[in-house]
Image 1 (cartoon, rainbow, N blue to C red):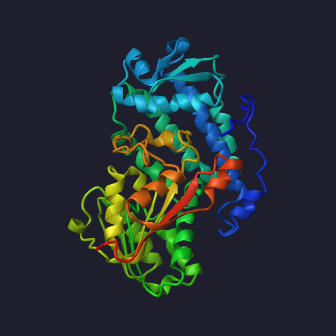
Image 2 (image 1 turned 135 degrees about the vertical axis):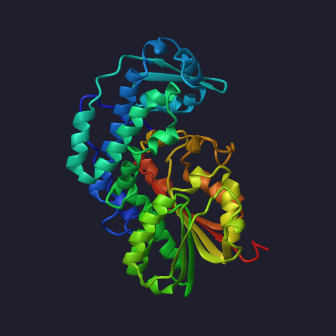
Amino acid sequence: MKAAAFDASAFKAPVRDPRLADWLKDYPPEVFTERLYQSIELIERYSIELAIDLLHRLKMIDQLSEWRSADQLCSALSFQPRFSFALGWLLERLLETGCVMARRDGDVRSYRLRHAPWRPQLERLHAMGLEIDPGNAATLDLLDHAANLYPAVAGGKQRGDQSLFGPQGIPLWLNYFHNRNLTYAVNNWTGAVLAADRLANRSRLRILEIGAGTGSASETLLRYFDQRGLLSRIKRYLITEPSAFFRRRAQRELSSQYPNLPLEWGALDLNSPWETQGVFPGDFDLVYAVNVLHISEDLLFSLNQARSALSEDGLLVIGECLRPYVNQPIYPELMFQILESYADVQLDSEMRPNPGFLTADQWRCAFTRAGFENVKVAPDVDRIREIYPHFFAGAICGQNTAGQNK
């Protein structure tokens, strides 16, 4: 990946390559708009400015006068050892500014300050983000909230999960996981379009959705299925979400919108055997999830559970925030790095070398190792990333071929 020249004095999104429009022509016109493109560019820059701000707030500048790893920085600054994960991400984000440089000694990556960073332009960029789209407030506000927690989490005064999902955080998450927030909603659309395309010839649809949250992905799936004339084919739709608060909210809204659909509700823990939770082998034609499976404690276990729940020739379709290149930092991670549930997962050198978001190739590898066939990633993110390395949305589909559950 070629690094773009970084202009510290101003923000201006580069002109979109016209080839993007052709590669994204199969999606509804309201999805991949100029407004979305401008928003993503602005928010990427905003997360870099937050990283600079945290460089100051965490008092890291003086410590970077010599080469130090993230672990060494945590020790020098008396941070919690587990904060090394988030600290490493901040330093990788800062590499893009030219203020910090890196080197690798064996398996250890170390960093040193190249020159003092500029004054962060957070207020100006925040205002610009709202001018592009008022809906960007959801992402910008959540990024701010997460960044404000970093010092306390680093020092062990707060825990990330409890703080981010506390009374102040819940309203921010509700706004973030909403279809008015286009930078998040795009993940819902990539999954819905791929699912509809692969199921268009099925006469009967039994759907299991995992990790539905407040129902924004469910809403988009049903909306798009309606547009494609597939809604009447749904014979069963079990929507699961472990959070009772989120689940009740989704149930209230979707049941009122679709009173005639066979909607069911449940709480499924994707890290425990699904059959003991009422999801039996072969019961579903589609297992569906958006931005859920990347937080599985054991990814291969959860993928195998999903395949077991599928009928012969059933499909697993997931919409995911995709990392374009290995080790590339992307803005949503700033919100998740301090969550214990995000970082405490089983790693695998081939399919899951890091917690959190994966590349398209890593997802292909994971699906294949779980026994899925006809694995597809859409849109063509491998070509897109060559001309636009900030394209983070995609969907992955795999088929449970005949006899796989036997």
